[in-house]
Amino acid sequence: MAAPAAVLQSEWTKIRSVRSTVWTLALAFLVTAALGAVICLVFNNTWSSLSSSDQLTFDATRTSFFGMNLGQLALIVFGVLVISSEYSTGMIRTSLAAVPQRGTFYAAKVAVAGLLALVVGMATSFITFFVGQSLLGSHKAHIGDPGVFRAVFGAGLYMTLLVLLCVGAAAMLRSPMLGLGILMPFFFLISPILSAVPKVKNVARYFPDRAGQKIMEVVPSSDTQTPYGPWTGILIMAVWVAAALVGGYLVLKERDA
Amino acid sequence: MIELQGLTKRYGDKTAVDHLTFTVRPGVVTGFLGPNGAGKSTTMRMVLGLDRPSGGDVRIDGRHYAQLSEPLKYIGALLDAKDVHGGRSAYDHLLCLAQANRIPRRRVDEVLETVGLTAVARKRSKGFSLGMGQRLGIAGALLGDPEILMFDEPVNGLDPEGIRWIRNLMKGLAAQGRTVFVSSHLMSEMALTAEHLIVIGRGRLLADTSMAQFIAQNSRAFVRIRTPQVERMKDVLTAAGHIPVQTGDGSYEVADVEPATIGELAAQHQLVLHELSPQRASLEDAFMRLTADSVEYHAGAVPPGGPALPPGQPPVPAAPGSPYGPPQQSGQPVPPGQPPYAPPQGQQTPPAEGQGQPQWGAQWRNNPRSGKRR
Image (cartoon, rainbow over all chains, first blue to last red; front, side):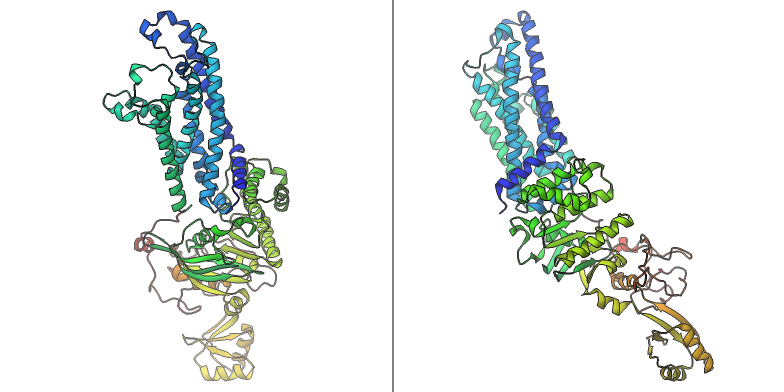
């Protein structure tokens, strides 16, 4: 067996030495934080025009994470490119010639992408939260309030899991066009739309992103009611991630490079 | 040492590699020769464990590739110079390979120096020329200072300077006692580098021989004679110390003699000659004959006055005194509608008119196969 530490180091070199890593992660951070800040500012300035029921169910934490809907697209690109660029460039053959133990190779890649996503995700979620709250004036939530820390920490987890999901799916699909062409519309359009359709939304709420985003909710609202709680939600997403990663591993193991 | 034992690869009902059994030994450059689509690259991918064999076995120093813990230290390979991430610098590309195999960082600088890429080490390989890309691939193969090296068509698309560099590199590596396994579809190229030769066609082994033996068997200069006065001619030639050899079609071949000498002999003895022609079987001809049955994609017949060389083949400059120079045509003009090179049956025999010549397109019509799979 190749030494896991050596392969991890190699994968770290790979991921830090391509521009797409910096671009996608920086974009995910900027879009999430900036859009969240703008939305918070808007809510603070138009507070008086909100209906009283809206004021009552206002979720300051969730509002600051509004930008994630868009920011997560950059995370999807990051997750997909981490693995599918190996295939699209042909690098996979060079990589597997250096590390023929495909399980080790894959595990190292997933670990490095996941750890990097965790660091960036946590930084993004905490910075986004604090920036957003500072713009909400008197309506802001405190990190010590019940459920708030869980939501902010959970947002970081959500972003990490989303990246891992894309890594697994891209390992199954292999082509970046296919990976981006399926995952971007799914998370940006299909999943949000289906979760608004009556009846269908009973199924759609078990989609990875719907279930995972539950953890960012501090004040439950009537239209996002689910039979599961925040931690169960992130667990449902984790099951999706595990399935995608296992599927990706099987494809990598069985198919010719 | 690379050992193949009945190695087979099938894609659906197409057999790309068909029970290949041979051994690549250390200390010499072993040429791996075959027409395009013969299965050379597929074989090499199976050696590296990239493609899974449908049958048989391939081992490197007795072990499967996947059992090598730090494979770059055993075997360095260049399959396709484009198999790199173009957005990564040459240095980082080599660094990530080195780290995975616990090769010290300074070795990256060393191989960059060896292949002459030090100046562009920090540049992204996307902007590299074909030759620079090839050098980067070779740097990757040399990284682990391996005992076995494998190159797939390393001179493809290189300028003469680059070709000579790679040739000398391969010879130098073999001279150090390493195993060098290099594929090509150009016999002339192999003749200049390889000492041992493995020829495949349609995935099957056609020849496994030393280059010297192959040359001895296939590259002879001789004179062909055709005469109605066979017996007298034979006597005259024998008396003059030449040994005429009868060929299947009634002509005679005499080795190591000038046509002028025989012409003068015949004139002296008032013998009628119907043919007196200098002949030379080039290695390229020999290779063509060997693989003619197994060429994956035949070119159509060349019209009269068409190119004398097979399509796609650059004229190769002959080294002075080299017995295997550019493919020499054997005297006869190419009859209309005939391929410019000899058909498989019988050496140098003019092919029977219109017999067994596949129509243009017959190949793909009969073999509805897809193109080269990646």
